Image 1 (cartoon, rainbow, N blue to C red):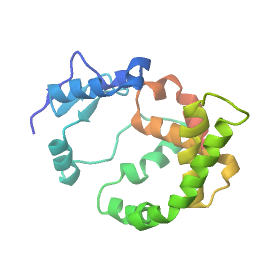
Image 2: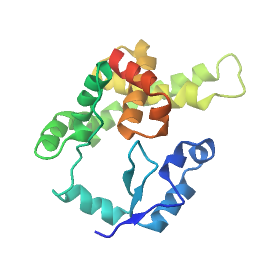
Image 3: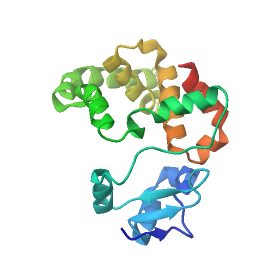
Length: 199
């Protein structure tokens, strides 16, 4: 597969305020360079950016590619947390990946999601009512709606107490940023490791 270097553009910029508001021009710039692009500003050692559908489809089905990641040798609690995270679903290759995925798939199948629809709609309406309560004219969308809705939905799927949704959200955020290994993870590394380790 042909490859290119991103050079004057980096996907690390997606974490800056301007691109977080509208990331799509950045995605297009990276895609226009090449569907498979080496970005030396992602993570500590750089990373491959696969942005083209055909290339992604090929890589996901080719056994020569691996989901496993290599990391610098770490000591202490952070090392154990990162080893555990990277041994999870997103760090597994076949045959382990399909085996683990089968156990996690049911809550996300169309029939199961359809059965959750009423609960999700009820939660969505409740969050909107609470966010706009007491005659408020404006809603803080991220804090009052966009963050709690998926966290409460996942809590319901896995039978977790709804009152702890802040903890689930912080855990998921920390887990995702550490797996992503982008600049936000580097900037707040201890905070996210702590959030994941405490849960």
